[in-house]
Image 1 (cartoon, rainbow, N blue to C red):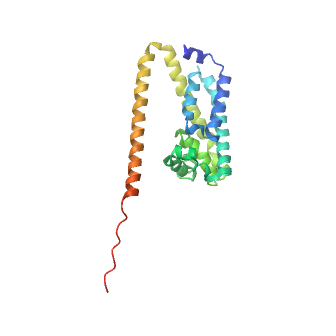
Image 2 (cartoon, rainbow, N blue to C red):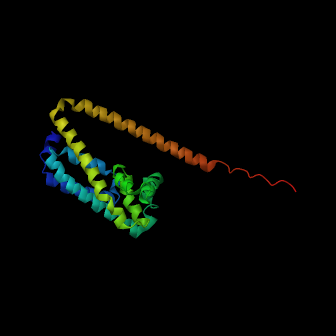
Length: 218
């Protein structure tokens, strides 16, 4: 079975792959297409104990810091061109705006750390921090805590889920069905929310400007 094969993988190999993926997640905006959360959970499924989770956490945190540094450098060099490129427009202005609020200091340093738990936004924040001129020392100060908490949490969840399924394989089909229904429901909610935002924006743009009252005759 696939899960049994994953459970026999060398943790060092899993850590090396995760390091590379998370480095690309922030530096090349791969996380805007394939959120790093999924890669971390998948890596966690291949782990079978706290010791293995600890080893891969170190590698994943290092990869996340490399990605954050690369994203900051890209933002510093390219500025707003990334945001206004074709790929940037595909990502969506609302995501860029949310990441910009975090990068400009709304919520302070803890918000920069907590941003790692926001899919897609966590890949955009380093680029925006660099393009908006946020000093690297200030930006990276909270990255180790945020990335370590992010990687540890999702690795642990993946490891627990993998162990549960390996010991309860008869529940594989119903659990997979529940997950599929949940993912479909979240997709529908996301599409409706996006349609609502688009309708609100078009309605605001199409509404006539308010008439200004003419001054009374003298």
